[in-house]
Length: 121
Image (cartoon, rainbow, N blue to C red; front, top):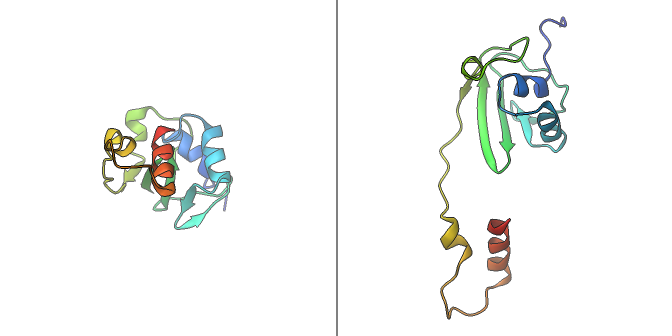
């Protein structure tokens, strides 16, 4: 494979504006949060057209299909045409009801405490 066809996954994620900084994309790859075609990848792994990329941006799951591989950073409008977003619809959790409990319901269980701490931050 020639150098003109080879693109790193972390730079592709940055070039199509899915991550704000390349360092963030690199850390996501190192942390095992990025998968290409179902396989966890390193930051220097190659990316090609029609690859399926799944990753977590914060707590949000994203799934995209590569349509083209840009040579350099793109504008946001053009970058959105470089991939096909197949992210599944996620249910919205009402944070207020997730954190607060009814008065008089007793002490929270260990599991309930963990859930409350997860939502608090």
